[in-house]
Image 1 (cartoon, rainbow, N blue to C red):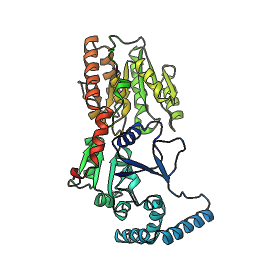
Image 2 (image 1 turned 90 degrees about the horizontal axis):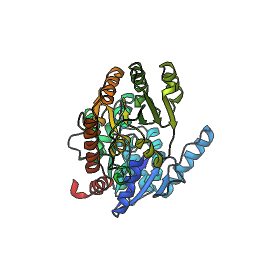
Image 3 (image 1 turned 90 degrees about the vertical axis):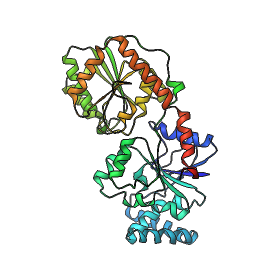
Image 4 (image 1 turned 180 degrees about the vertical axis):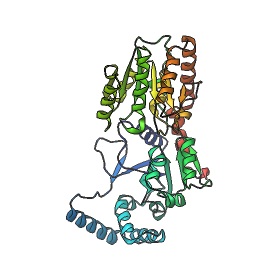
Length: 394
């Protein structure tokens, strides 16, 4: 069985869930191909097929699009006509149809796919007819941004997708509920497969008995507005006013660095906060091991692998109630879930954890470690994805 994954780019620095998924399928005998807008020579896990691309220059764009379209019509006439007909049947204009044809040529030239799996729902927009034209089944994965944020800016963007998709993969129940509200039929087959981690690499048998002094606090996240980092800084500013000694490290890079660094300065915690930037994934474990508390106070979050990793090495985790985080951490059982956008509440929860008896800290940490080891292993995830594509699932 051959599966074609459609992504904007090959899996990058923080997208370990996609790498694990591809590797697991290959180990279970599936053939996997990657269809991307921008290929990467550094990605060697499977074959890549790149979209034609659109030149910035108007004349070059016109020439390239025209040439590719004529070429495709001559050498892939049957597929060409089937796709254009499907676009017309969907009520799209001639211009939209040709635009979608051009964006999908790298897929449409591949005639031996059993599944076309869009790694994010946004990647399926304009390509909803590809799988049917190829005689393949269509799957789509729900993450965070594509279900929670993109439809707010583009109402009705998934209407055609809901009609065409054969099976849905969601990483959390909350994201699935949002999709139902957006129009996904309850009759569409759905499989929840959460992210997973290498428990052998991150797992430890050592549970910290005491906190460092000062308390070491960590977040691993892109410097993006949806990660709620400014609310976290505000909570830590309040914590400082309680005479609590701490050091806060943020691992990650992004467009919000300047704003967040200035916020830390204005809030009086500049010298208490370290922006570590991009850190190789194999070195992140060391940061976990040297920390006491992990915070993921996101405004929107699909699930978050970093929270699983933090729990696996015994960190006490505080997360927001954004989408999948409340499924990742069980409140007052394996960690704490705090209402988002409420820095004062977050500060109070941090204060409670810092003054929690050592015995209670250890119990929470051990429960989290056991749950991650039992429910979020790569082996379990890979088995679930292998079963996802079987006909018996329908």
